[in-house]
Length: 163
Image (cartoon, rainbow, N blue to C red; front, side, top):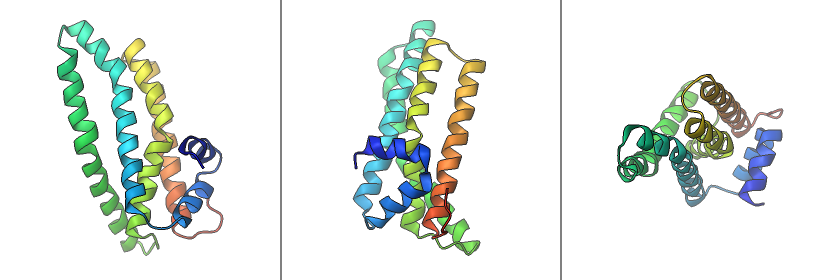
């Protein structure tokens, strides 16, 4: 299935999609591609806000984009691998049967699947600016991301009635 179809299906039932993707086998290249795609989408989502900031403050847009590229495409994937490892350790301490690969994959998929809301947040930040609208979209993104992550972990642990 195409990634875009999987993303749409995730909004209907994240557990089913995660179970199907994990059933395809443990492939670290797939997990890396998903986290890199999510980070690139996050970088693209920052463009409108950075353009607004450059216009309002008189800063060079190239410098802002370069810093954002370094942070989101080079450093964030490493941070996400560390977060997934800590999540795996916590789950193992709680006696939840999620493999290290499963914990990584579920986190990365939750980020990629919730990326349309990140793009919306970027548009709101660029066109409207900071305020209640951007905060509301950010809260919706966080809730959806946590839903995808939790339901994915539930499905990866082998529970039958995953959301």
